Length: 236
Image: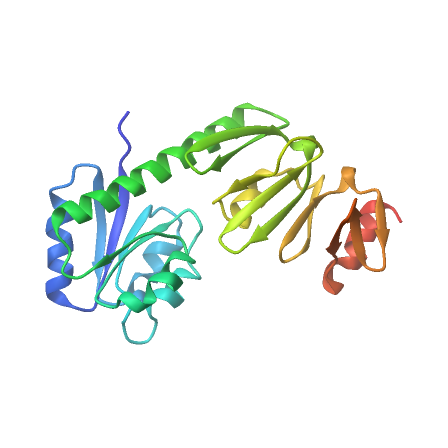
């Protein structure tokens, strides 16, 4: 079955909104759920988690596109459509699949939509695999799907825009999935987030010293706010 993506448009410029609407209307893979002149107006529509893609301007009043991107569900991806090239780096740090500069041509638009289709197709495949494979997790690693046993995961670290899986054997695996997406798929009776940048497999923790988990030559900090729960779960 062909992937269909639910999308919305957010832009405070009427002509820009109309252009994007015309592009969406002639793109069969897209289903338009609404067009809004501000991020605040679109908030209710997006927070339900049913929107796959947002065509989003950046320079808008009240709540700009970068700020808005930081609060939306991780399953919703963004394609920025803006006249401001200087925001590109910030944009790619917050769920952005592409960054289009106005005026946007239809071929440029289609190329960005292709990235959205690829991302969501892979995401749905990962979700489907993880539901049917107990004790396994499937992650998106660049353009591949990689399966690994959950008991082989030693710890998981956030590094800038990537999540790195460190295992008891084999090389680390790097994924563009968000930490929140990872947490939703891991058994919470085995894994715990002990720091904003780290999740550990409690069954693979052997040494804790001076407020840190020790894995060989790697020292993982334990947040003060999580230390009591962590030690209780370890039974120490």
